[in-house]
Each structure stands twice: as C-alpha cells, then as structure tokens.
Length: 229
Image (cartoon, rainbow, N blue to C red):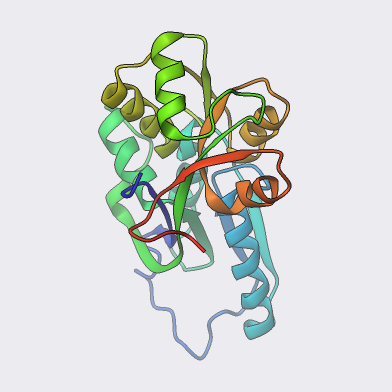
C-alpha cells in the first residue's frame, strides 16, 4: 500500500503549445478542461477547483467537460483531437496514459504527444470496505478472501485503471480470488460500495474520505510513507 498513490497531472492537448501563443494574448476566450471521468470523482473535483481559480485569474469562462468511459480513453481522444492552441486541457492520472499504452495495442491517440503543464494533486490511495464486511484490518481481509474464493468483489473506475490493477496485485500477493467489478468512474463505484453491491475498493482518498468519516465505509489501509493525518 505504501506505493499506491493516485497522482494527477494537468495536461494540455497534443502539442498544445506548438503554435504561437503570446503570453499577453492568452487566454482570449473560454477554455475547456476535459475530465475523462464522471462527476464526483477525484479528477473531477480537482479539475473544478482549478477551473474556478482560472476563472478568477483570467476573467474568462472555463468549462469542465466530463467524457467518461473506456478507462479514460474517450476523454484522452477528445483532448488529442482538439486544436493544439492551449484552449483545451486534460486532467488525468499520468499513470492512466502509461497503462493504456501498455494494455492496448492500438489507441486513437498518442499518449506521448500530450504536453504536461503541472501536477495539481498528489494523494494516497486507500483500501476501503463496506462496514458489513467482517474485516477490521488487512490481515482479516486477506484471511477471509483466501477462505472464500470469488465471494468478495472489488470495484474500480474501469478496466485497466490503477484501482483495477491494485486489486489484481493484491490478489497476486495474497493468493486470493476476488471478483473485479468495473465502473465508469470512482463516483458510481463508491455509490455501489456504500450500498453494499460490492465488498471493497482501492480508491482515491478524496472521494472516499467523507464516507470514512461518516462511518459508511471502513478504511483498512492507506498508501504513503507516513501515516495520513
């Protein structure tokens, strides 16, 4: 869990500043921030905070455009197809670009063509379970999972996402079998976890934290070198 982090980077569209963009003229019109996830997830929350600050600083409209699905590929494709003028940005986990490049033989965009602008969020992942699950720590979860193969389910933001691969790694390291249930983002995944439709999830901390504090989810472990405050 120490290495399970969900870093986010603000990325411009492919070769976004390849054309002449003069500092004194930019931005001269509205800006679109594409989020390859549905509303309510970590990427979406980060994008909306940044969009509000951009509006205040630039005095221009900044629109957050959610393009969820296909492990972030739909949003990335939309950003890559936009004009390379700096007016379309993409908020995504850098790892998702790397993962998609490794998992899919053919993509409709070049992950290496995106120009990074800034890291905007760096936070730990957290392993959360439904309170009805008889596991109060990771050791109990491991024991239950090994004794009950294929009875536990874990949610993720979609096939090939960090949460999906974290669950696969957990099974590999513990010798357990847990059924993967992919969603189109962390918000719908957490909603079903709250309702008990799935057993557990390797989640970003930000969307899970309010439910942990309210006792609606139980946190068993968090990533990071130090205990998270």
